[in-house]
Length: 515
Image 1 (tube, rainbow, N blue to C red):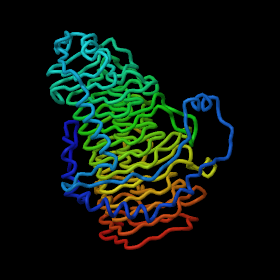
Image 2 (cartoon, rainbow, N blue to C red):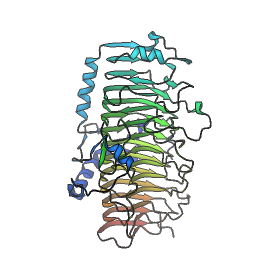
Image 3 (cartoon, rainbow, N blue to C red):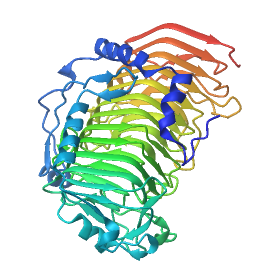
Image 4 (spheres, rainbow, N blue to C red):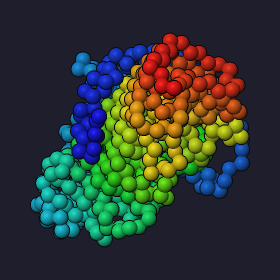
């Protein structure tokens, strides 16, 4: 059994997935073709919406909003070595070259008075070294104490490696402090690179406080808000009050479904990141576009940003208003959700999200796709929850979790989203674990146009149906299930609820059934 602890090397994820599920080059083209065949066209993402009353809070956020418009799902490319990347990756490469050529000086923070002894306040030294930007700041091995670092445009901050260079928050830093962030959230910043170091949010300074975060995009290890062209590579995040890494807009925006925030980040690559002990999520995105997250591992959240027992703490969360996000060869362990694609009721859903390769170990819900508040028959139907495409997924032994005490384990949940295609998905349970007759995969709550293909479920001996499509007034519909194999699992392979009108099932094999 895999361990995937906080020291897991996420660059091994590709090899693990290739051995257990298959190589992504096999899945990508097939999954794209399946998505293009199955999705409904843009008539299900209307340009005009009926007017409805809105709250004072929504009215405030609409001052900083724009209409939510959804373009085509970006293409995924696979090179000769089997590496997966988005079609817009060339833009990032060109901009990185621009950053390299336009940078005019390289400095060492030690030369400005920084001391990596784990005691000295180095805040002023970092400020002087960074100046107004156009600089590469080298940070040698050691533990450097700071009350927060803000990066102007055209700035590179480089350490000697994870665990070698550590930047740690000062004991007197307020709870709201972001350890590293960009300088100007309103005007925005561009061309920022942070790499090869560890970031310690020093949650211990807060003692036994019941909540470790304040509000919005504060209280995190690294936040890019309104950043265009950003890179975060080879970085470890330790025990943040809120998030390890937050790719965000100027403000989180709750103007209502069909609105997105102005000032979102775009063209950002996060690669080879580790994070643990986070109060909310490991990596999260809000109202941002063209985000590439690869070869990263998030595990063991504290959940302390939430009320105890109600911690929606996910390894990877693609949240409110995010679009055109690609996740490749990542992993999560012992979180509430391994990958959650979602939105709050009073925001637009994340859309145009693609996952190629992910390992989920002992997460309560390995893959959880939902638009909160748009599930019941009496709720408004989501106007923005569209287009999720995923392949080469691995769910290992989802479990009940103290993070969210009443949440039942699932390998996959799809709620409210339309145009969801999952291809080459392997789910391996614990044959001795009591899943209390709950289904392994749940398609529910007004989900539409959902395709599951090449699914293998095994060793969920004490679970309920392998796949359950929920019926009733808030039923799922327009579902295709094909090429499914279930071994040593539930007494019922697939359960179809009452009232579902459009469902196609073919090539399902169930063997060694435990009754």
